[in-house]
Image 1 (cartoon, rainbow, N blue to C red):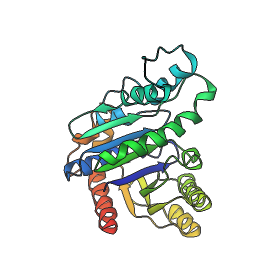
Image 2 (image 1 turned 90 degrees about the vertical axis):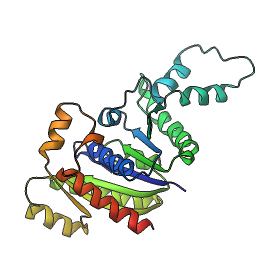
Image 3 (image 1 turned 180 degrees about the vertical axis):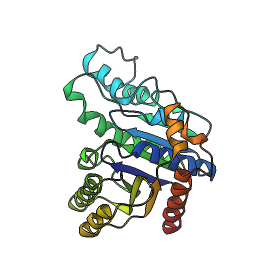
Image 4 (image 1 turned 60 degrees about the vertical axis):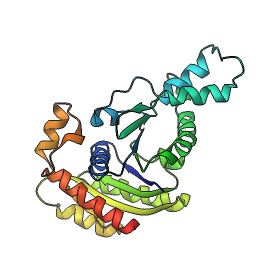
Amino acid sequence: MNFKIAVAGKGGCGKTSTASLIVRYLEKHRKVPILAVDADANSNFGESLGLKVSQTIGTVLDSFQHEKISIPAGMTKEAYLEFKLNETIVESRDIDLVTMGRGQGPECYCYPNVVLKKFIENLSSGYASVVMDNEAGMEHLSRKTTEDMDALVLVSNHSVKGVRAIARIKELVRELKLAFRQQLVVINLIPGRLDPLITREMEQLGLKADALIPEDDVLYRFDLEQRPLLQMPHDSPAVRAIDELMEKILNHAN
């Protein structure tokens, strides 16, 4: 039985860094193999993990929608599409990556989400852990791309707007009756201490932080130098905060 975790939040809150450090924890604790899913049309999960993406689900679907396809004899279009989608998997020793991306036309955005959901459902059974980095906002939830996950990690940066975005996402989860066994709130990029204005906003919204992640110069340098976050040292403040969060998540799951 595998463990599936999704990361969501507003743009610029550090979702991808958080998802990458979750993958780092799972790899270090040998919860492998891991399937990393980049469900953000503005894809950069692979860069954070040190994995090079050559094609995405969006580009594969775009070729099916707009180009003449030569399907091998004896193979259905559906079977050939599945074959081509499997070619989008970037493989490494412990971590494989699937990237949604998007096609070239305006009509190509929703369809990749539908295909991604079915593709990941079929694919994920072969992995011990699944980590999905979602697009900014709430569109992925309304399309139910993240349905039936074990944990939903909601990330806010150190801002009132970010906290309000988390509250809206939690409300949408309730409205859609999405099946998350755990929902956890993370406040990211904290400069020293949590500002009282943010604390007050969270109290008014009925939110409680499950993890506080400080600003981390090590993480900043890794990102600036485009180094894989999987290689970050264990004594990094951000790594320690994510490790503690993951211990909480997995202990609750057990």
